Length: 417
Ligand code: HEC
Ligand code: HEC
Ligand code: HEC
Ligand code: HEC
Image (cartoon, rainbow, N blue to C red; front, top):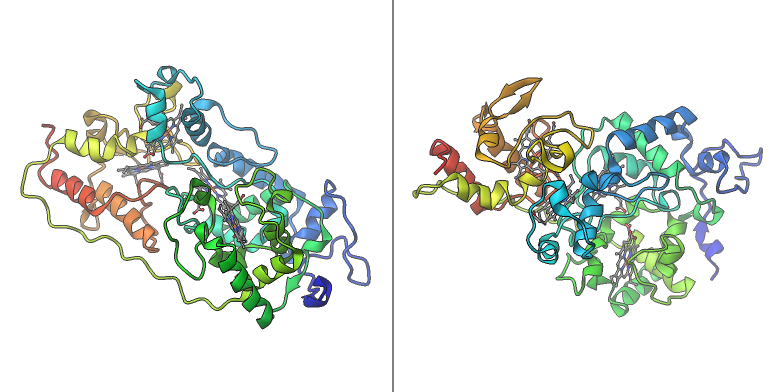
């Protein structure tokens, strides 16, 4: 059967460039009209909305972690992903220049596990739906079970998220009329797709009906859980993606499996329409009893503050004055002046509404810093606290034992020795 016969040609998109018969006119990838026809009518953005989105991408510094169409990478001292990749590739970086003390660069490279790989934000328009993109930016969820970092909860309003989504789609347009249709459920296709999914062992990189298993290689890191694909992806692009992913994102880590179009269509049927049981909600780790033994600052620093926090809450003089987004500001956040790189820094607190305050001030019965750590544990279990942003921002939560260590230290009066 031909693809055309199986697809309902529901045109989802705005009619800005439509003629009177409702057909969408062929479009040139680079023309502005092309973009409007790729976005839903009610959201067809004005040029000013796209401009606003671009300015917000600059303001929120999305390029510190992502490759983005038409956006230059930041200088190395602000380039979280670029510097980590350079370090792990063994590029000769003078880390001392940035205030980073490293004895052996390749060993340090081997220690880095975060922001080495992040999804590439090029070629968004053919792949992603506007609504999904907007909602994800406003409230990010974990998409990739094998990736330790996640998209941070930034301070975006819904209107900012919509403008950014418009700009991301607008600036990465690929005019392709074949992408603008919806597939219809087809039971035989789903069954064949399931068999192909087994045969080609797609599950060795992707979680889907089965939760993520141990990945066989690092290529799996960027592989999304395919249960979200039905909300994210355009149907036509999905078929093309499964067959020839490199024709959409040239440097993608998704392999070409040499599938026929028919097989790709069947796999798309399976991914879009297979019945899935709801995702299993993770349990947040327990709050352990406080330790009986004394806990010193150096122990807490080694396990928590220097291990992760310091990378965003550095000394203000670090890296040409780049004290990290949690200290000198960044990712759209105002400077909060929280320095977690030294005892004095930790003790001197942070700015709250422009005033110095203790990082251990009580917030609903819990010291602020502890509450932020707990909030991240809860975020990983899918529970969001609207009042406190989980820390470490966008990075794996500290485990139950480490939180117990910090809580004990705070309860003991935060001793230095
Ligand atoms: C601190 C690093 C960081 C910053 C800053 C950041 N992101 Fe992300 N982003 C990530 C990571 C890590 C993921 C992967 C999350 C996952 O798959 O669970 C991600 C995922 C995404 C995705 C999903 C793409 C896909 O293929 O699944 C989009 C879209 C995105 N980010 C857009 C943005 C935008 C827009 C901004 C700026 C407003 C931004 N990000 C800022 C780290 C970052
Ligand atoms: C100038 C280079 C450079 C920049 C810029 C940089 N890092 Fe790093 N980062 C490193 C190096 C080198 C290490 C490993 C050595 C260490 O642990 O100190 C590291 C380690 C880390 C770690 C702890 C190691 C781990 O995998 O748990 C985190 C978290 C981290 N960086 C986050 C960030 C974030 C977030 C940004 C952007 C705000 C950033 N880094 C910017 C060089 C950099
Ligand atoms: C070696 C690991 C690997 C294997 C095997 C693999 N994939 Fe992927 N897949 C990836 C990666 C990595 C991405 C993300 C690519 C990107 O964003 O550039 C991806 C992306 C996808 C996407 C887009 C999903 C989304 O929501 O963004 C689909 C659909 C997909 N793969 C289907 C399949 C199917 C079907 C198979 C089996 C025929 C398969 N993959 C096998 C690594 C793999
Ligand atoms: C990826 C960067 C990043 C990492 C890693 C990180 N932070 Fe933050 N942190 C920030 C940013 C940005 C802010 C400011 C957020 C805001 O103003 O809403 C912040 C704010 C805070 C606040 C104030 C929260 C509030 O609601 O007022 C606390 C407390 C905090 N961080 C603690 C920590 C601790 C403890 C760690 C390590 C476990 C950590 N952070 C790791 C980026 C980071």
